[in-house]
Amino acid sequence: VYILLTRSGTLFSRLIHLATQDDYTHASIGLDGPDGPFFSFARKHPRFALPAGLVEERVTALRRCVPCCLYALSVSDQTYCQLRALLRDMYEQRASYHYSLFGVLACFFHIALPRRRHYFCSQFVADLLERCHALELPKPPTLVRPADFCTFQELTTVHQGLLGGMVSKYSF
Image (cartoon, rainbow, N blue to C red; front, top):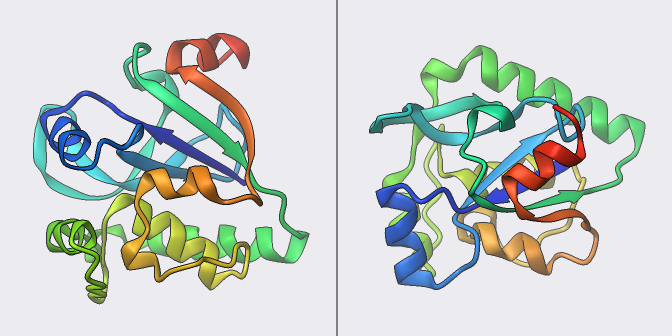
């Protein structure tokens, strides 16, 4: 399982970075290696912040000058299959899921705000990992920020630097 953290430079990413000073402002999860698709809650259209929701992201479609960190997490075959099934089911029903802007604000103020079928990027990744028992979290998924993944000792750093370096490294 791979977790990709980025800081894209969009207005929303810059606002989050300004408020938190975190190195990374976005989290995605991938199950098919560094060159496979990643999934997250983000903008549905590149030019507009809204609408946002559950999306498939391709690393090659992102800007190469984006700072990133790619982590790997070893899981059992059973956990991997659970993650894949849950992700597949959610993605097939993606129209019924929504971006949780209020959740982002609540997270900033350390207020857990769980809402049915509403996620922000790092909450989504953390929730998937917790629901499938892939990772024990030190706090609720609604309070997990992208930069928190940098502190989880179960994760192994695969690449840290610019996204373009990762693309070159894995020959996308």
